[in-house]
Length: 431
Image (cartoon, rainbow, N blue to C red):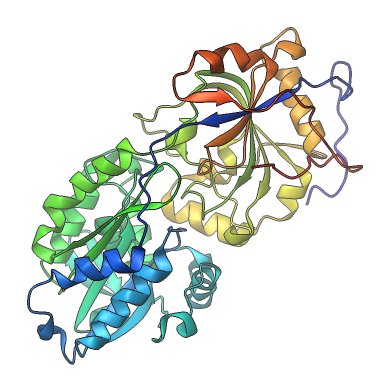
């Protein structure tokens, strides 16, 4: 697909002098936990009567998102459960991700280092579900059959702002329960409500499911603006509904942003499911695929996406929120995974293909020549690695005066030109 050059007329062609770029350091508050194994162990020791877990088979949920510090959190949790006589195992809990099949979901876990060898317990993956409860309007609520056959479920997930809706509860423990652990059937069923209803759907579904299952405890993980684990919350079942909104507020206060208010061209080096549910986080760009209101970001005229992360395995969902991309990226798309993901979520716009240029240089030049600017040398360009890594970014010369007025950003290198190889590929990001 797109293996041939697309010829069209562009005023002046693709030859032009690009503005030089300046490296900028954005400052956010760093709150990284220094000793993750010790922190999770201390939290687990606060649980009352851990001896009650003896002999219980316990399913530990692990999703499809990259989570800082996940491996030691899981390892210490498994060690705690074993020490108290429990029989833990891991259940992939990621809705329709991994092309909505058991093997694909195990492969995603392997990407994050979650294997039977690293965990020391079985990983049991299946798409089979059972109906556990119903919504107030009769819509069935499903959970993974294997998890339901266990004596209990340990919910473990990152708590963060969602990429498609706003509410008191967004991405976190309740969504892991009713969407992630619902596998393809459960995720598809709830997504038919539409993201504009998720602010009420997720709390209701989560509450109804919690009434029917045993959750000995749940683990909520909160990251700081540097994508580092800053908080581990071990929560008993009866406190999940009341405490998760508080942890979400903490996550929202610590999210990284692009501090430049107005941008002619935003260049995103890479997108992927390990970065955000929509490949590039709408909480940073202000562009949700759902179209739901409430997302804030810079005023951006044109967004260019250059590549996919390896960890996304070709699932380029979110590319539809870009205006321009490259032939190289499109040729790496796994349309099966991407279409399954977009169809399940009901966000078809996220899987649309933007305008496709022959290489990185052409994509950037095309964005500049079609942006609402008269003089390219004065273009306001921002170049980021992805929407997670925002401490170091690059801006064009025209934005230097803006950066100098920002309280929490500074220019840290002098101007330098974009560098491309002989095929027009933008040379590697320098962090």
